[in-house]
Image (tube, rainbow, N blue to C red; front, side):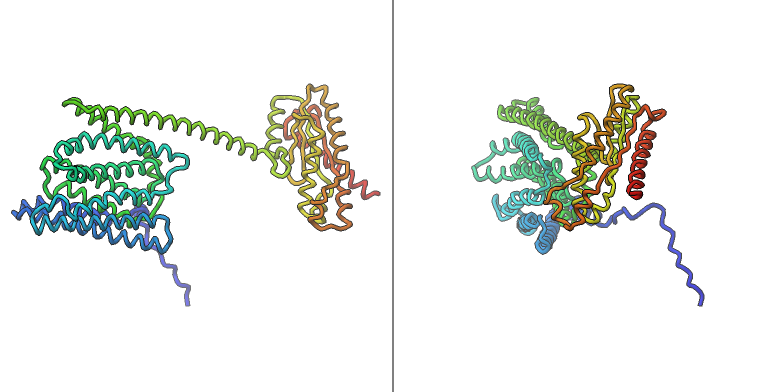
Length: 527
């Protein structure tokens, strides 16, 4: 039987399609919005009665609201089973959507079946207001814990600025006229409830988008809250003027808001939103100030056509003061962050040039100091120290005793060198010393003195603390092993090496150290 031929994989299509997502979810999401938008034009073309377009718009919104309620409820149940942190937010949002779906159903019944707008306060208003109150709270619960550390005060100030600016806009464009036309306090409270709740929802949406680490569901919910706020405020404004007609752009905006909320229930958290935030960071930083700019424009427009209330002007002044306070907090936070970064950089630099066991300079620090000194042609003396029979310490007494011995060697080296000399552990049981001399004439004397001090310090037997030695194997050999530890030292002055470059100095110091080590071994063998 012949060897089977390996199947040839089909050629990859031109372009990488792995990162592309199917278009059908977007088309499905756009379908109810397009249906509401085209209801009135198609009705006119076909010559159908107006109630047809009203039915299309109202029933489409009912279907989307019910779908959003079901999907959100399933998301909350799944989160409860998996013990997800955002489960309370999804549960509260499902209640809010159920209220909206109920209110929309009552509204559709009056509009389509009864042919009227219903009483001034009906179950439809209860459902809509339930959504207006609970949806922002649900959004806050879902975004809980995503505020950047140290920025909660700034986030709060941003929220106050956004809310104040939207309150000024709502007062000048909607609430002022409602107060003048209200026949009773109850009617005024009902009419004002929508603009106020919309301002709260829009405040939450703008603040979360601009000042938190967003996930895809929270971003979609913020879009839905913003669309709902715009649609509700527009409805109150056009309703006061009697210009509202069922169907069209306003109903399509409500439908788009519900579609965004439904999409939020189906999305999973990911990194795409964060990456987009990084690319569009400047625009998002300015987002909380756009309502303030809108308020300034509205005040200017009203002032051009008549008189502006003193309260609106005072409110704008107060909001400007809050912006200054917020910017001052940014300066303070940036200064604190700069200090932290400098401290961390200093700590990292220390770690990069410090031996963690002994606290001495490490090989990198010693090499850098040696190269810097030789490059400046400064007279110097370099010394290498290597412990003899150190391996026996680890084998007999254990690594804890070996580490304690290295720390003891480091302490002795510090005691016999000057404060400005560089003492380093190069690795293992190898140490080095770099001493800068006053001039070339002192190099030989400095080298001889340094060698004498090093040999004397390292020739004294090491006696480690009992709490170190008794934690490992204790026998008669331990003391003998510790007593047998000695050191080989190689010292060289820069004047003794032609050219005096760093590599040549290291090689010569290393050669002299091993010459002494071989001599000691030969003496031991001969004895």
